[in-house]
Image 1 (cartoon, rainbow, N blue to C red):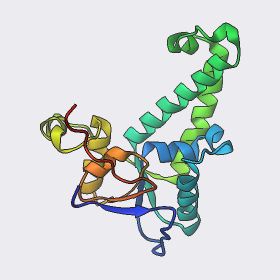
Image 2: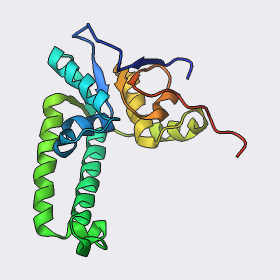
Image 3: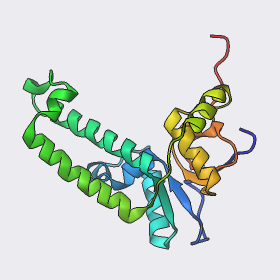
Length: 194
């Protein structure tokens, strides 16, 4: 964690309109998923405002194809929860049951299309392969970071391709060196002696 630079997005203003930023999945979700943008939470508002200012300034924004897959999974999960909670008769529907409801599947497809379109119009999408050597690197370095495999591989690719300005609310990102993390969070210490 010694080689990470942290910027508080609530007080940081970017004056360099050429500065590239990489959006993590939650930030992408808060900015591109129409249902969420209607009801921003206190946690999401600073990220939404920060990204909105960057979009207005013309800063180049990026995300990865893997962040898009996570984004669409989160959208589906949220739509399922909305469906399930809308009617007491649905409270026992599983996620798999929800996928079999044709009308809901069509609604989900429409909202995913809008979300994906919003993401593509906001960000340049980076395609890169996950390779076994990268997964082995993740595993072999597990004690040196707190990321899940997706985040680790995405961040390693960001560093490789010089997309080091990362906007995220993920506290695990503090454990990855050589990035500039734009966030509202502070790092948490390791838990020891459990």
